[in-house]
Amino acid sequence: MNGKKYIIGNWKSNKILSDVRSWFTKFNSLYKSDNKISLDNLEIVICPPFIYLPEADNLIKKFNLPISLGVQDISPFPQGAYTGEVGASQIADFAKFVLVGHSERRSNFGETDKLLFAKVDQADKNGLQVVYCVADNQTLIPQSVTMVAYEPVWAIGTGKTESGENAGKVADSIRGNLKTLKIIYGGSVNSKNITDFLTGNRLDGVLPGGASLDAGSFWEMIVNASRI
Ligand code: PEP
Image (cartoon, rainbow, N blue to C red; front, side, top):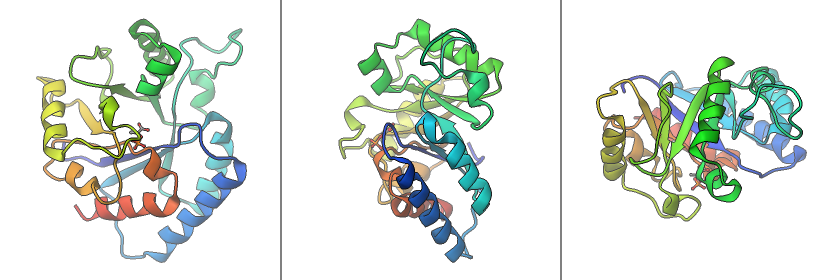
């Protein structure tokens, strides 16, 4: 747990193309104007809607930003006759990370363990790093998973958070004997509370949704995390 800390921004189904361009332009100017910050201890990831992956990829390259891309979902099938789906091999052209089992997908789209395990299988076959989202320490986790996001449902988008201490305890119980399992926390993380989650080395990062939508607040989280 002394490795890099992950800050994984989940944009959900937000933003239109012009917003995406403004976000990266603003992030770039904040990043370039702060020449003292060291990001060596951080892995910064943004998960935009699928449709903006190519544009986000172009902007990251154009501005030479220390950001990797992730996606919010993945098809449980390989590429082929699966209308409306985006397959792992297509995602792998742009992204390194994939969220699987976010509570909004479990509740709004009825995603079951069986379906989620098939998604993980597709991600594994195509070299994508899965971030497997669970609501508690009772949720089934596929064996191949190396990174889990602990996201209590009551804390998502509500402004209410776990304490860093409690999140750390739940992380320890999810981890059990699997000492190398990375666990990040999600649920109303922002620039004010991020330090609480990242100090103490029980958590490997955070998964902010709302606070990642503005490049300024996302940058503030990065600055605060870089000081830990
Ligand atoms: C999320 O998107 O997984 C999330 C935790 O959102 P928020 O930070 O807005 O609660």
